[in-house]
Image (cartoon, rainbow, N blue to C red; front, top):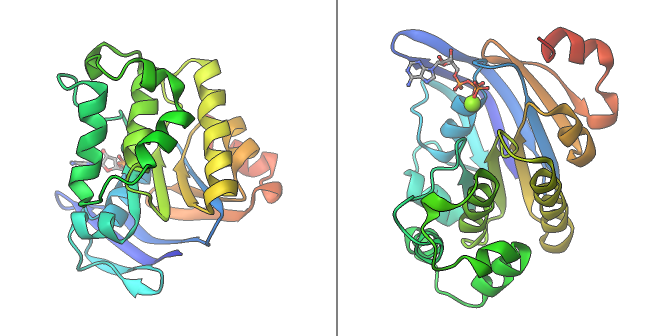
Length: 231
Ligand SMILES: Nc1ncnc2c1ncn2[C@@H]1O[C@H](COP(=O)(O)OP(=O)(O)OP(=O)(O)O)[C@@H](O)[C@H]1O
Ligand SMILES: [Mg+2]
């Protein structure tokens, strides 16, 4: 589904990604982990087209997307839930959702109902301003907005960051459901190890701009966790 080869990124003269190598197969959930500042978000922004790359290749369904604008990558089926959620605080929940649709030029064909069924709290709060929602509710809104585009690949950047445990469970259940019901591929950046272990098929670990370990989630050893994840 998605393949990244030897990806290199520089920001302000410093090399941030040094040959990232990563694959998200169809209908699998891949977890990208690593400590703060190692390049996880930069990798995701390179996939969505928000970060300029200097070398390497990114293919989606077998075609290079490096020369595609972010909106065309979204139309091709890549949806992105950014770190920190990025919803519009002064727009209502419903307006925030509609923007997700407008952005990709999709017609409304029932996906609003399906998405709201995944997150019942949003249905209740459609007329509220996004900014008054709790962190967990805003995260649900950001995921719902991404899902309205009916992506083939859903990319999430630390969706559990600063969120209470019951909402983390709800998000986990939702991701599992999306994978089994709609055959979606999911690339999840996460620092919450147990969340990854529960959900992921495959893991990748990043350190200083490169992948240092990867495999099936069952192959993630305590030694690797100690070396690259715990502080
Ligand atoms: N716009 C920018 N200007 C300067 N440096 C940047 C910029 N964006 C990222 N960096 C640097 O690139 C490195 C990787 O950042 P990135 O946001 O990709 O890390 P991350 O793994 O997502 O970290 P976190 O877990 O804290 O979100 C960091 O050292 C960061 O300071
Ligand atoms: Mg980040």
